[in-house]
Image (cartoon, rainbow, N blue to C red; front, side):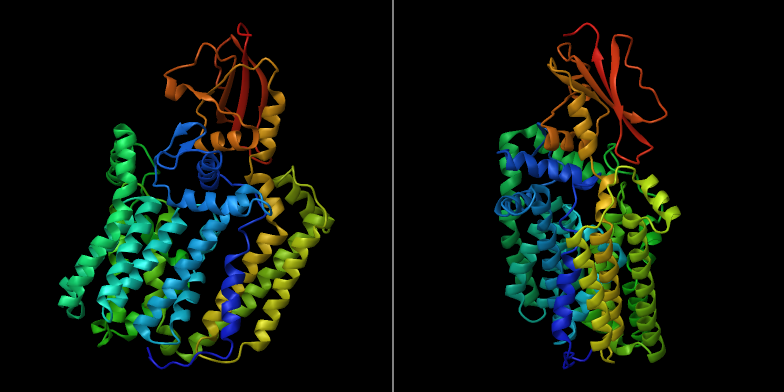
Amino acid sequence: MNGQARLPPYRALVCLLFAAWILPGLIGHDPWKPDEAYTFGLVHSLLQGGDWVVPSLAGEPFVEKPPLYYLTAAATAKLLSLWLAPHDAARLASGIYIALACLFTALTGRELYGRGRGWVSAVLLIGCFGLLVRAHQMITDTALLAGFAIGYYALALSLRRPRLAGFWLGLGGGVGFMAKGLLAPGVLGVTALALPLLFRSWRNRGYLACLGIAVVSALPWVTVWPLLLYHRSAPLFGEWFWDNNFGRFFGANELGPHAQPLQYLGILPWYGFPALPLALWVLWSARASGYAKPAIQLPVAAITITFTVLSLAADARELYAMPMLLPLALVATPAVDSLRRGAANALYWFSVMGFTFFAGVIWFYWIALEFGVPARLFSHLHAMQPGYDPGLKPLPFAFAALFTAGWLLLLVLLKRSQERPVVAWAAGLTLNWALIATLLIGWLDTGKSYRSMVAEIKHALPRDTRCIASRSLGEPQRAMLDYYAGIITVREEVTGGLRRDCNLLLIQGEANADPNPGREWRKIWEGARPGDTVERYRLYRHAGRR
């Protein structure tokens, strides 16, 4: 917690580490099921001239979330259309929002603990297991995370510059709102109100001014799009506001997966590792007097309120826990100074040996996948992804070799210091992620992409196709049919039954369950994504409709 902590001599390497962690995985693969596929479906509609006030998915209004992320992704897709595929360019929006989340986490850490400690907070954040995969996906939660990070920075800054903090607090809540609805302004608002009630440091006139400015700053973010949506369609506004916010939270509808008891408590030990044990150590070490410090009070209040709100919700998913990682990394920041030498050395050597071992395993799997040695592993991997075409890909191989060499160089340059264990952990995690995102990305993409399956469906369509009805077809599948083949189906769930002018019927179901649409329907195609033994898609043609 030393405000005069010295920046390490390898500061440039830490900056390089952030770039190395953020970039791999953002390009080089198709939209994956389920979240990326339907998210890009909304981005694709904007690229085709769709309406941002009422986002659409495969020709139908889709107002589950506000449009900030979709607009950002459409902008990156359009700006980089000459160099990247639309879905790859769109996914870079996640990189932008995650970079913002890391930046404002670093600013918050510096505000709470002094110069030279902000970057430690950000390194602890990117070292969390739970953030690794989700941060590189095309999902609105990355923009939500950026909004939370801006809000927490504002609350830390309010102790020193309350009026400027008010602007940032309103901006953070507004960005979070336009990313995913009421969660961010709700949690940030409750946290902002709880701080002066619980702690003396925020109990002053300056902080009251901060809250007033925050309301003004947030007002355009939280009013413009909802008012435009309401003006365009009151029913759609009600669907977004009530069904997708309050309905999901209270379980009044069937949207979203149902929460299990203590679900977030169960995932935090691995989701927040290693920040969680380091944060617990900080709290244990500060039990005598440290709890009176704002640097502890703010993140503890934030994580407690976020955990409570998420746990009270009727629906839950692992990715909803992402905002808890921000205050968790902030609480853990002083551990680099207070961690005992034995524990610090254990974390460092575990990082070096563990991540080097797993990097070797990934290289071993790659050799088997591409060159057939050993043959048994080659057969096993290709049985899992039967559509994968093996062979050396020079560019991914070059990047993987560069990341591996960079890891070895880092181990040489990383001198003994208090920060060395957390830097080694984050760098080792980055290495393994980068190897997966370069050496194995094509193999993974084969099984997670809908491209080949949609191509088969398109090839199976007869020339006299008038209209394609669908049954039980999910949002990701509808989005990818539109993107890859320009196919927009007429869903019987929307029309109340099969339209009589549709001579084709596409049904999504399970492999071992025959949907049996009736004797008048003759199956002309059946298939699935390569290696998928659960989902099955069947295309039928009506015998009497030409």
